[in-house]
Length: 549
Image (cartoon, rainbow, N blue to C red; front, side, top):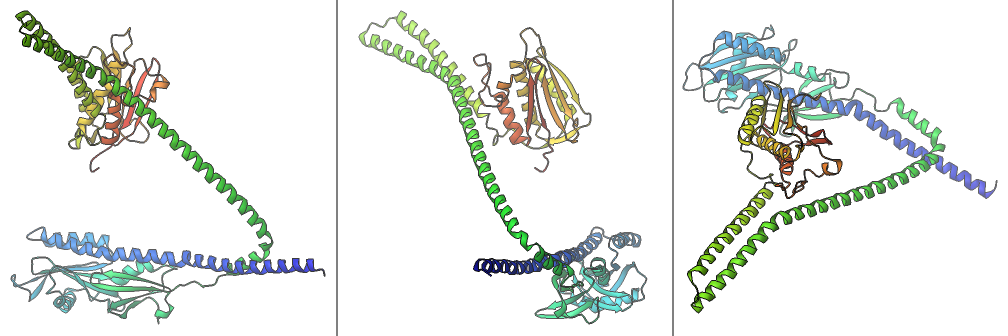
């Protein structure tokens, strides 16, 4: 046999040996995963559910104490009715009793006032519950309001294992006693094919004492799962034995199967390497795409900022320029009057001309400064995230609100140019900012009045729809005008600050920008919109319930 063949044989045997080792390791890992799925995870879930059921007992005792504290005197029928609710909801509560001290000033000489039970066991009698109470009440005399529970006690081997819970009603010398069937709780959660081999140990310092075992001769060394339980003042340790075999047939099947397919591993590795290269190429492509998107967004922001600066410059520079020119001219007039006065040639005619011109120039300067101030104030309204537009969330009757808005708008602005068509679900209420919603409708209507009317039309129709008109069942508001519409190029810019198609005609381009910010930041919603030429513009958003937001 040649050296080449020997070498290839050696490589083949080495590959099979390594494959066997890897297969063995994978079989072990699979077995561990199978063990976790079949036993550890269900056991952890069961222990969590068990802890929650034990915690429910605290809720039950608090309900009982609150029941007695809520009334100065409780009738027997009231007590029986309340306990029947507890028995129906918690079938492992076997009995409830109410004790009070004959001496209302201090503990001692307790008497049973009320007693009710859900099971007819011999030990659950009035005398039996009095005996149980007398055994445990001394442990709680000096505990102010905290409940204590006894250890798990087989009061009767046939009937079950119980714990007695005693709680003082705060500020009184009265006690609530509740008998809980611990075995019933444990069996309701753990009596299944996975966790039925269990035991409960009571933890006391470093020591552990067996309280209850579902299987005879339970050993801590045989436990495969542990969890700590809490029942009032008791700390328990839950131990569960795994009922399944550690090594299953799947272990040997995997090992044998891995030996069979070991020859195909090289092909699989080659495929995986190629997939890895493709994945890396995809990651690079996604990164480059995200980078390009970020650049596009950045360029769009810069473009929008340029439009914003241009709008501010155009709208503010004109009144500022006129104001500066007026003040400069006034200064020149003042210099001329001062020169004439110094030279003694200032007569009444020149002074009257100066006063008249000064009055006109000052008026012109003030008017333009006021216009510039209003423009700056309007620009500030674009940022409404921290503005005090919304005082408090209130319940709004949307039908009444929409009707009042239309009536108020028509009375203040005239109803000739806007014809409202209202469609609102009756008795529809939502918690929102009424003032913000009113502002949104005002800006939308003003935008329609400014931009939507056709030259040959005397008025423009506005359809205001509020209701659950979509399949999602949410409350939506739709504002739709039947005006000239917006072309596709302008439509994507209508919410940008200072963007307007009527510059120089009284519009500064802030209305829809304010609407966008109000809806996003105050009403916590998203805007949807669309338009067709000569068919109008529509804008809609969800009216979210903002109570508690």
